[in-house]
Length: 433
Ligand code: CMC
Image 1 (cartoon, rainbow, N blue to C red):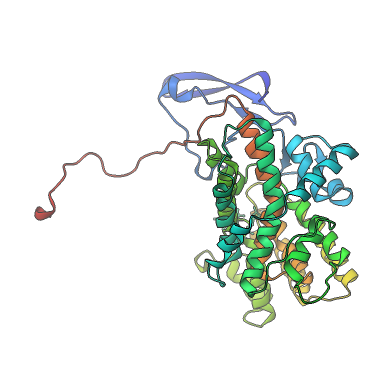
Image 2 (image 1 turned 180 degrees about the vertical axis):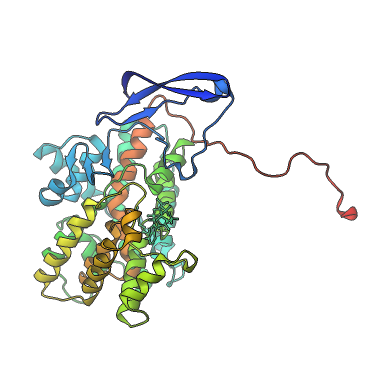
C-alpha cells in the first residue's frame, strides 16, 4: 500500500529522551504520526481506548471528513452516487476503486445473477434455528456456514478465487436475508428470479409466495437501492475493523464477514436503526413525550440515549442522514402514505439541534435516524432493518478485506494493553483458602 512520505516529523519527549517520529500524509492531507518503531526504540506504547486517534491501516477505498461532513467512495461524493449510481455499480466501484465501463458493469451484474441461489442443503440449516431468532443472528450464522459449503475458500487463494468468494457473498446474502425472514414467517423459501434487478429480487424473495403472482414495486426497489448505496462503506468503523481483524489471522472471507455481521448488530452501531424506530414508537404510543424523552437522553444515569444521534467521526451533519431525511419525504409522497413517526423524528431533531447538550457535544442525526422510517414505509419488518444495513455494508467489508489481503505488508491485528491487575503473588491451594 503506497503512502505519501513527508519531510515533517513529530517530536516526542519521554523523560529526558527526545525522539523524532516520521509523519505520513494521506491523499487528502491527513497527517498521522508513524509510531511503528516507538516501542522498539523506547519500550513505551500508546494508550487509545476505542482507537479514536489511531489509524489501523492505509486505505484507498473511502474518504470521510467528519468535521466537514464529507463522504466519498474512491473520490466520488456520496451525494452524486446516491443520485446517479446503482448499488451494484457502487459495489464494484468499492472493490476496484474505479467506475466500471458499461461492459464491465454488465459482466459484473451477470456474474452476481449466476450465484444468487443457495445450495439446497444450506436451506435446511434455517430449519434448525428457532423461528423467533433475530434475523441478524441467523444471517451471521449462515454467512459463516458458507465456509462449510465452499471449503476450498482460503485467505491466500489466488485473485480469481478471492473474487469468486466475493461474488458469491454479494449474490447470496440477499437470498440468505430473505430466507431468514421467510423462516420467521413459516413461509416457503422463494427461489431468486434472475430477470429482476438486485433489490427487486430481494423484495420478491421476501414478499412473494407460490400461491399468487407478485411484482416488486419499482419505487420500493429504487428506495432500497438508495439505502444500500448510502450504507455501502464507511471506512474503519466497528464492523469493518472486525472484518479486517478476523481476516488478519488469515481466516477466509465468509468467516470474516460473519464476524462483521455480528459486530454490526449492536445498538451503538447498525442495530441503532431498529432502536430508533422502537424509540419513536414508544413516543407515539404516549409512553413519554418527545420533550420528556430528550430530558432523559441528557441524564447520564438514565442510560437512555437519543438513538440515531451522535457519531465517533462526524462532528457535523452526517451527509447520509441529510440525503435520507429528504428521501423520507420523497418516498412517503411517492407511496402516497404518511408516517407519524417522521413528524416525531423531525421534532426530536429540532429540539436536539437547539439544545446546548447536543450542540456542545456536536451530536447530529446519523444514518440510522431516518433510515428506519423509510424501511417502515416500504413494509420491511423492524427485525430486518439491521439486516438491510448489513446487505448495504457487504461490498465495503469485502473491499476492505480484499485490500488487507492484497497488502504485502499486512500483519495480524494484535493491540497491546496496559495491565492493571495484581502484581506477582504465590498460588494458595484451595484447601487453605
Ligand atoms: N444521546 C445522548 N448523549 C449522547 C449520544 C446520544 N445519542 N451520543 C453521545 N452522547 C454523549 C455521551 O454521553 C458523551 O457525553 P459526555 O462527554 O458528557 O460523557 C458524549 O456525547 C460523547 O459520546 P461518546 O459515547 O463518548 O461518543 P463515541 O464516539 O464513543 O460514541 C456513538 C459514538 C455513535 C456510539 C454514540 O454517539 C451513540 O451511542 N449514539 C447512539 C447510538 C447510535 O445512533 N448509533 C449509530 C451510529 S452511526 C451508524 C453506525 O455506525 O452504525
